[in-house]
Structures are given as C-alpha cells and as structure tokens.
Image (cartoon, rainbow, N blue to C red):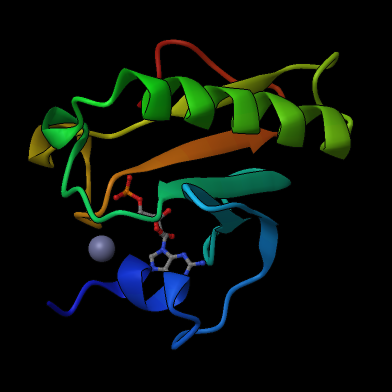
Length: 111
Ligand code: 5GP
Ligand code: ZN
C-alpha cells in the first residue's frame, strides 16, 4: 500500500513531528491553513473515521490534541479540530487524520 501518511509514520518521508506515542503521530501540515496547523494521525492505517470502532483510540486522539494545544499555548485563545471524511468533505489523504488549526480568527460556517 502506497499511503503517504504510513510512509511518514515509518519516517520514509520527513515531517516536523510535534508528538508521538505508540498509537498516534502528530506533525505539521505541509501546506498550513493557519499559523498552527498540525495533523494528528493514527499509527494504524484506517482510510476514514468510518473504519474506526476503537472508542479508546478516538478518545486518546482528543486527549493528544488537548495536550498539544496546551503545549503550543493555543488552548485559551482557541483552536479548531477538523476531520474531513470522504470526498464531499474534502478528504484528500485516505489515512484518517485530525487537523488542529489555530493562531488566527476562525470563521463560521466553514468553507
Ligand atoms: P485532507 O484534505 O485529507 O483532510 O487533509 C490532508 C492534509 O495533508 C492536507 O492539509 C495536506 O496539506 C496534508 N499533506 C498532504 N501530504 C503531506 C505530506 O507529505 N506531509 C505533510 N506534512 N502534510 C501533508
Ligand atoms: Zn496509511
């Protein structure tokens, strides 16, 4: 399988890692849409959120997001978490990932 995020996990492709444990990897997005734009991905390959049944894993992802937000000092100002699922949502990489965006005023509704 030629999955770009699996290759980032294996360190075959370089990335700016901000957090890593046995379940998840977090790294800076290559095309940031905000001053802070970090991707949190599962180490196990799931194409989309629809494939994940593991509630603990989903909970863990959000605990990691919270930890990174605190470390980056964006917790009080605010941050946005985005997960695009399938084509109409704009998913382009089919390895499940959560965008952590911050550092500017966000708008609603999202584009
Ligand atoms: P999606 O559109 O699937 O929700 O988000 C995919 C994200 O992955 C995009 O924000 C894109 O910039 C990012 N991305 C794609 N390829 C790479 C890469 O090789 N390295 C990094 N760091 N980010 C990537
Ligand atoms: Zn993958």
